[in-house]
Length: 68
Image 1 (tube, rainbow, N blue to C red):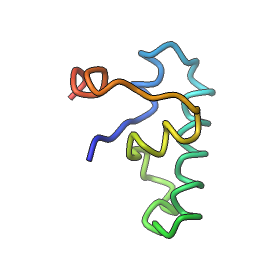
Image 2: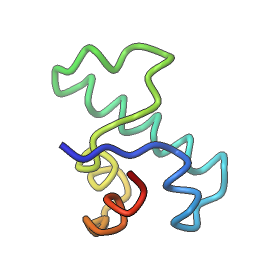
Image 3: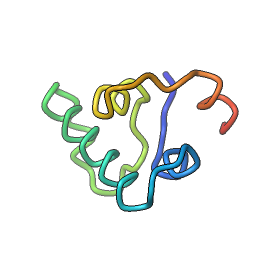
Image 4: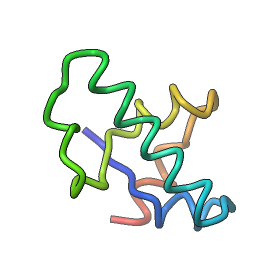
């Protein structure tokens, strides 16, 4: 499973607050879908598919892989 954090979103062109807000919304979406692990405030990494669901566009796999 590919994961993403706010720093990668910043590299993709989002501002700091927007990137953190996207991660927060992705965590909220994951909790709604039964992944209670993401209720943790310290967890700042979420699956890429959750971020794609929030922002409505696909993040290319090579972008995520080039970061790791």
